[in-house]
Image (cartoon, rainbow, N blue to C red):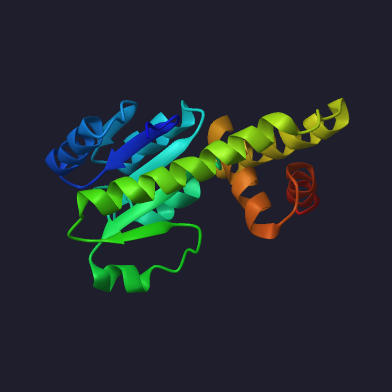
Length: 184
């Protein structure tokens, strides 16, 4: 099976990421990027339509759980770590594989994740989100502006913050923006 979505491989040692990228290439995956820092992963993920981040427990600049919080919701994470480290993992939406990695387990897990993401994409296309009204968009823009001014964030960082807060609280983006503005 060939992946439809992008795979971003990230490990502290770039050589390790490249070895996994080559393994995936040999197994029919072709849209793969290899990095050794979370900032590179976040940048690439923000420029992609979705996919899988395959990473180690700690990158040079960030812990896997922090990285997960910055990923667009169209991305899933596959964490590769020692069995001891995997016992500490508390984020339920992250798939995990113990080290050492066995290629057949890795490919099988990626195929499963790819099928899940493909099904999600089909559902999203079938039922696209409703268009926001001008008033709703203004509320979100005002909340972003407030965060940008008060917390010295870029527009992208402010938007991601609102998205994350929205997901964590179970509220939609407009409700979350209204809460931010209410606590001004």
